[in-house]
Length: 174
Image (tube, rainbow, N blue to C red; front, side, top):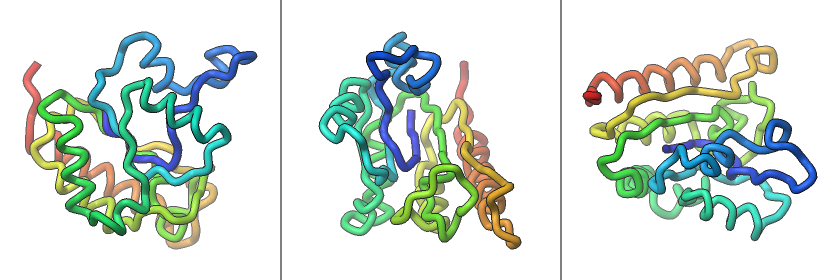
């Protein structure tokens, strides 16, 4: 799984039930539903338990690419890390719109400054040509929070187009 988002996999709080606070990725790991080729990219949100949350991501089989890594390794470096991590496995790509900086996608419930530009994200997605994408989604778009120019909705539509293009370019046989 490739997950482009601002935050890590959240573990289940000891006093809470899975249904209330455990995220879908933590639960999927616990149930053995995701392989050890998963990766988060665009991470920049503050974590409540820094060591614990990062450890939990690693325990759940996720590598992490921080949003600021793009400053050091560039778009091509991000693409290379994503491609190396998932290899030739079948992959699901989940794009949380909050991977983008709020200047480019303000209409999300979890805006965090310091995200990627829409151009950077689209270039990363275009660079994933050849991945065996079996499914994808774009989540966390909240049109009610968008500006009059609807920049978030426009970005989400273009991201969805890029994801569908990846699936069409490299059809996955069952």
